[in-house]
Length: 172
Image (cartoon, rainbow, N blue to C red; front, side, top):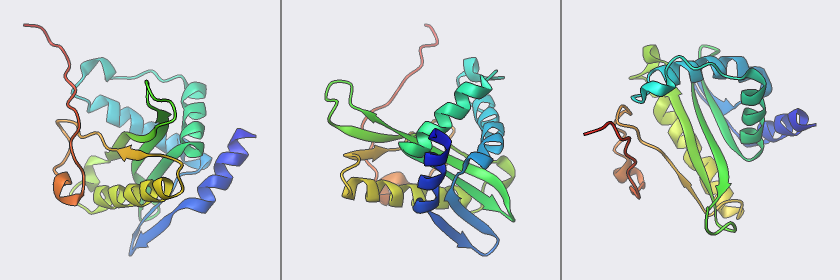
């Protein structure tokens, strides 16, 4: 039942294309490729504990279904092959459960396709999805995480405001 609902919602959201590339909402059939990219994403993390992940396949697939139902998973295709993704989930505020935010969890473009417009186009589509959800009162806001290795998209100029910085303790 969860998979059928996820596929139905995926069909209603998004599809934008440009010549030989396209941004669209992911479907369950994309999960294998998304999981491959998640491994690449984890291995490129500046946090070494995330390297060489051993994901529980069933757990991750259930989680991806949840993100499709309550959030968004966008994939970017180039010449029919998925080369990028942006995953975001909706969660209530810890202290104010009626305040909901959609938070970007993973934004990845395969290294050989960086420098193309794919990452930026994923971001633009994420903004459109977030704005629609705010307009429909599904969420109150949506966020983006910018890691130290993230490309510079000049986010302030594009309407984003930094609200916090996270640090990893590495000792003194």
